[in-house]
Amino acid sequence: MYRFILACYGVPKSSGAEAAIDITTEFVEHHPWHSNVTCIWDGERLILQADNDFDSDGLALIDEFSDSISAYIAELFDGDIKIESITNVPTEA
Image (cartoon, rainbow, N blue to C red; front, side, top):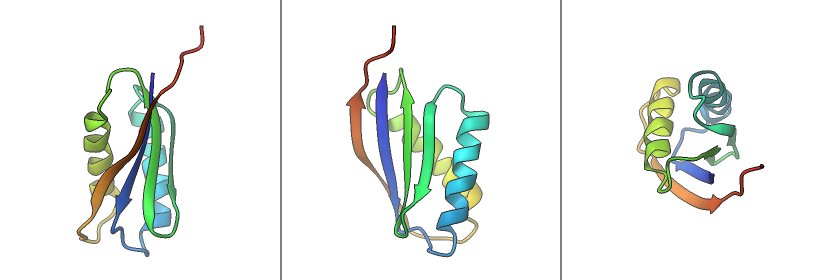
């Protein structure tokens, strides 16, 4: 199992808090292949944390996060998504 922390920089301050709630809901309700999903707004960036067992490099998650950002932030902006960390998490037996 992999745990990812991704961050999107450049998000408009007026959209960040609401987008974090919407993105968390989107992942929980429509992306069941990810677990322990949270998206928060820290005042500067959107931070997504999620676990999955198939995406060792995080590229699939980045793509899904980008799609969600586009869906929930109407204002155009020049953002950048970065992988903050990928850790191997032991699965419970």
